[in-house]
Length: 368
Image 1 (cartoon, helix red, strand yellow):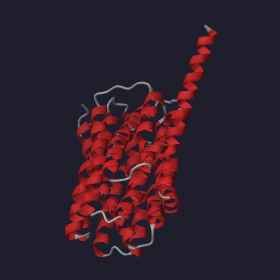
Image 2: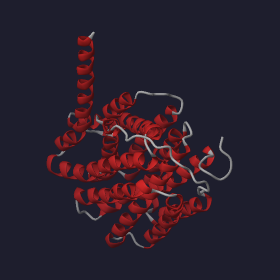
Image 3: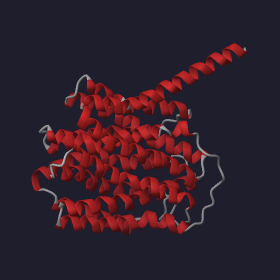
Image 4: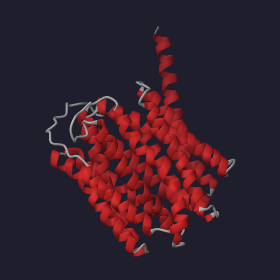
């Protein structure tokens, strides 16, 4: 076990991820709810989702040439900036306050995730990627239900005060790296093996910025919406914890499992109700956990830190934009058919991988 106040120490890694993800989960859970309250339709909430995730592409590209100061900034500063934004939202949650908070918050939070993931890659400690995923997945299983109930009872200001203080606590406790770490040169990752992160992003973006407004507009109470989203989070957190004890070395198999599980919203074209939503999100959450933890672990083993995290976060960011923005447009014009089209993408990928393997097996049998 690593010692001292550093991410080498799994306690600090888990604590860092847990505090930041808890605070960000609370804050971001309110974005589509506030946005939907303006009555401007699904497109607006989809744009909010895009604004939250677009910075991942830009910051990930910028971080390909990282240094120790940049990593330390990314692991520390977001806590303080997001704390300030929370206190701003205590004062006012109007349209003109919300948009700048989403833009600034989405930008600064990407620095934290990308810096932490590069640090995990540099540390090259087995199990850190799975621990990191589990620690930030746990709040996704608990907080939406809690926050949905609190919003239902007391509204926004108490939530933003608490979240601001939690970010501030994280800023105080968060360690910074004091060692110069040199990455071992590694090859570029196989894009086809990392591509399922795109589908993970689609499900996450759709869940938070399309499904939540959709359920609100259908008259579902906030506390029940919180419970539904928490079920997704519980399956994600549980899958991440389980993966700490499971070794899946075949990255192609990981991609296939992830793609299959996150494609299940296609069944909503046949039946869309509370029961099928919960069933699909439960299985989808497991698929998300496999993608997040095992693909990050694969990149840590095979790719240089900056390049690996760029692929990882960029694909997730593009997927999140697709799930939120394209998902909102597709649902607005095509309803459940639009959802089917959106989640057919991972099934196409799965079909291509299976076809490729079948073709390769035939070629090998012919050569014998």
